[in-house]
Image (cartoon, rainbow, N blue to C red; front, side, top):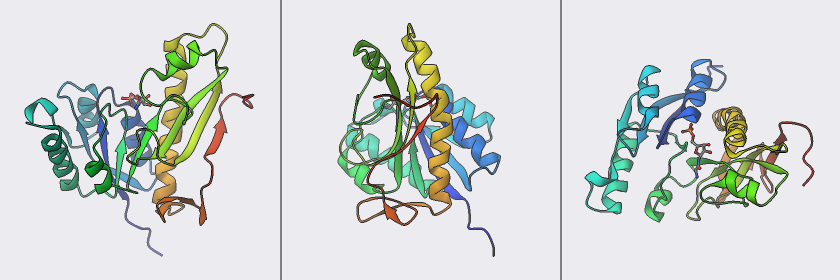
Length: 223
Ligand code: GAR
């Protein structure tokens, strides 16, 4: 039997692009049956654009300020993404709230990674908020994107214990290390036909996913 063609990914970034690079590496190593068709940033100075080009990936900036309205900007992003004919759109540190039309266009074909254990800490400054709340466990979530900000079905979560005295930067680095493992893994499940969007929800291995799959990165979590 011949292998199915690789899943085509279009990755949206705003910054460094370390998640983009981890996904591109997993593709290049054939750990997952996917290929990065293009990378699009909403800022011309996003460091991830150069990182993508260094990996041989087509990378483009679509800058909001160059467009008359948010709708026009989002239409330009859709046009750029669709010109890469993606099977899946990957939000990897894309720091913009997307309009309903954009989300509807990619419904069931768009994933995000968020640096918290959703539904906790939607939005920004998640590590700072977890530390300020005195949480002992923190993590990241890979989820399908729906109209509700950071609210779509969560597929996979990584959890770790917050170490005593750990600061925001240290915590962020440990969370990112988990992200670099869990995001390629989730994409690999889709590429392998294990994970799919069906009946307006996530299905894994032929069953509706009623709760996220969780992985503890440093022993069992306690809350
Ligand atoms: C990641 O840690 C991701 O979880 C976060 O931005 C970072 C991007 O890093 N995303 C969000 O906060 C989205 N709400 P990267 O550019 O190095 O991949």
